[in-house]
Image 1 (tube, rainbow, N blue to C red):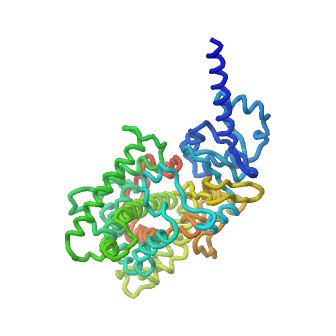
Image 2: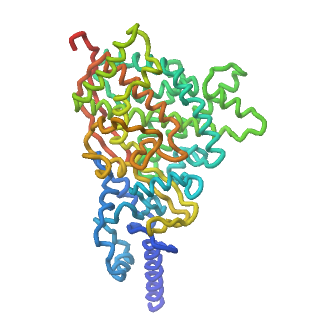
Length: 500
C-alpha cells in the first residue's frame, strides 16, 4: 500500500511539474502575458469558438484589454494547474499575448508595430508558418510552406499569369463572364449569392489555369473544393464524420483530379492551350529544373481555392453592404454610369483606362475587405530569439498577426464598425501598411490582389449599371474564426428598366 501511495505521489509531482512548465514555458527573457490553456489542447477550443459579430474576434478582444488577473499568487496558480482545471477566463493581457493553439505556442499580435516588424523581417527573423493541420490541408509543398528562392520562383510563375499585363488581356473575358452570369441569374426566381459568385469565379480561374470547362468535363472538380471548404477552418479532428476529415477527403479527391488532368495534358504531346498547365509542363521538362510535379499540383490547388473562395466571400459581403446602404449604392452607380456616358460607343467593353478610373469603386473595395477580415490570422515563425518592447519571442514560436484587430482599431478608424468607403478618399494603398493588411504583407503580399480587385470592380460595374436587386433571406455573418454565410445570401435579381 505504501508503495502505491509513493507511486501516486510521484505521479502527482510529475504531472504537476509537467503542467506547471506547460503553463509557464521557459524563456531567457520575459514572455508576453497570457495563458497556455489546458496541456496539449491549449486554447484551441476558444480560438475556434464561433461568433456572429463583425468586431474583433472575442478570443482576441477579450485578451487585449489589460487587468490585474495575471498577478495571481504563484502557489495558487500551481495548485489549480496540478488538477488541470485552471483556465485564465476573462483575463486581459494587452495587444501582445501568448497562448497555445493546436498544440503549438503562439504569440498573438494586435500591435501595429510588431505586425509591421514581423512582415519587414520576413526571411530574416521570421518565416511563413502554419499549423501542421493547415499543412495537411494545403499540402506539405504548398507555396505558403516554401521559403527563399523556391518561394520567389513560384511567386514569379503566378505573377506571369495574374500580373498587370496579363490582367489587361483578361479584362474582356472577366466582363463577359460577369455579364453572362448576371443575365442567367436574372432569369431565376432567387440567387444564393455566395454560391453563385463562387461558381462564376472558379470557372473563370479554372479555365485560365488548366482550361477546365465544367460543361464538358466528366467530373465536377469544384464539388471537391466545396467539401474542402466546409472543414477548412474547423477543429482539427481527423475522424470520419467530422468536418476536418471531410476537408481532407475533398483535398485528396481534388488532387487526384488535378493529377489526372495534368497527365492528360502531358499525353497531348505539345498541343498548347496557353494556360498554366502549359507553363508547368514546359518548366518540368527543362534540364535542372527545381520544379517538381508535387509542388506544381499543390500550387494549382492553392491558386484554385484562394482565387474563388476569398473573392466570393468579399463580393457577397459587398452586395450586402450595398443593400443596407442606398447612399453608397447611389454613389457607386453614379461612377459607373458616368463611365458609360463618356464612351463613344456605350456597347463597347470596359477598357483598362476605365477600370483604373474607378476611384470610388476602389475605396468601396478597400472598405469591404477591411470589414470582411476574411483571413483572421497570418502566421509566421520566429527563426531566432527576438526582443520586442520588453518582451521575448523565443526561437521556434509562432507569431499570429491579427488583421481584424488592426482594421477595427478605433485609434486609426473612426467608428471602425461603420461601413464608410469615403474614409479612403485621398488614401493611396500600395501593398500593406501598419493599419491595412487585408491582402497580407511583406514579401508574401498576396500576388492575386490585382486579380481580386479586377474581378470585384468588373462585377460591380456590370451589376450596378444593368441590374437592381432585393434581398430575400440570409446574409447573416458567422465567424469560426473565418468569415462564413451559414444561411447564404439570397437575392432576387432584375434587369433595370429605363425608369428603374
